[in-house]
Image 1 (cartoon, rainbow, N blue to C red):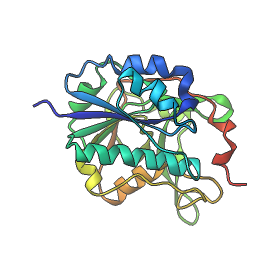
Image 2: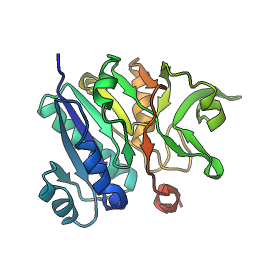
Image 3: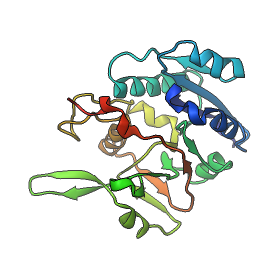
Image 4: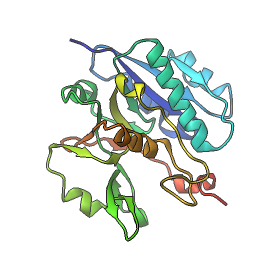
Length: 240
């Protein structure tokens, strides 16, 4: 069996600093039955033509209307609807600044899970790196999700596959059957997870998985390179 996989990513010219390197990398993956589809939400409608279409990359342009978290989740949903229409078995979400091992697709497929992520570093407090993993923590009045510190994460790092409450989706293999139950969504004015910050689609993605009793896993035997930019400079992520 050789499942059909669609590598998907929302992107924009904000990731131009690593775009050529990333394109070369994702086109070099060793799995033998995958395609690539990108959704560009740059303000310049010519960017995706020059940087993707003319280079032979299947790409759709979404005009970035509204709040940034809204058009990113809209971009993700466009990618999923395309995968549904083309009857792919899996989507492999690979964000446009994440560089996984070249055999990542076939490796994640071996787990035979509905959702499985290969982790990568992000910035934590005071520029201390950690892996994007959240767990449920009790409070006096309810429960809330908490991003684990680097020390907490590495205390759990044992090279095994672990069921998780939430982690990033920057390098995630997802069975298309998952999207019979959930879609990508976000909140620009806070929501179930935040009172004053916008909430990205990955947060809701894992919440909706939990609500639908769909397990998610993270593989601690591998880690991806993440060439991130400073998202803290984007003030529109914070409500004024």
